[in-house]
Amino acid sequence: MSSAIDEKDLEIIKMLENNARIPLTRIAEKVGMSDVAIRKRLKKLEGEGIIKGYRLRLDHAKLGYRARAIIGFNVDATRLLEVVRTLREHPQVRFLAVTSGDHMVILDYWAKDNLELEKFIEELKAKYNVRDVMPSLVVEMIKE
Image 1 (cartoon, rainbow, N blue to C red):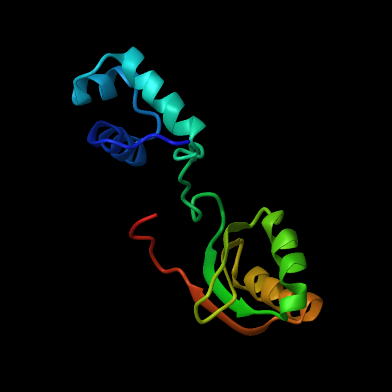
Image 2: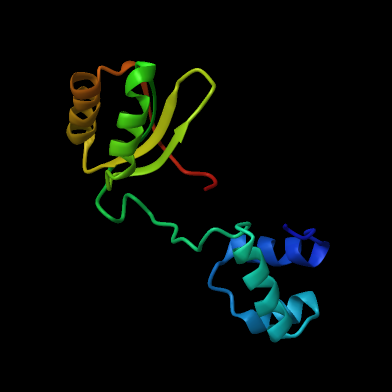
């Protein structure tokens, strides 16, 4: 059974969202607690699955991915699990979600160039018979 999240937990989470590498001593100082107390709270938040992990934020262009697209598409319901299981393992699929909106699946794909992006989309159509593919090229990331 999970315990309640309080204002201190929310404050800690906010600091980690801004910088997951912030030293515990800095968090402790800002929150007004000991670093041991912060460490205990983090263990609790991790144990309850509130904090699922700590991730890097990368600049796709500086890594050589000059084309980035958010792609929405539909697929036959009988193939949905197969498609998402396969795409989950694809290294250039950086985000993947099954949705209830305009598209069954939405993903964030990083490509070396527009040709590689186009090839990926054509592969989706040919291999999985996806339809209603709507790629939106990312011009600038404002918030991740």
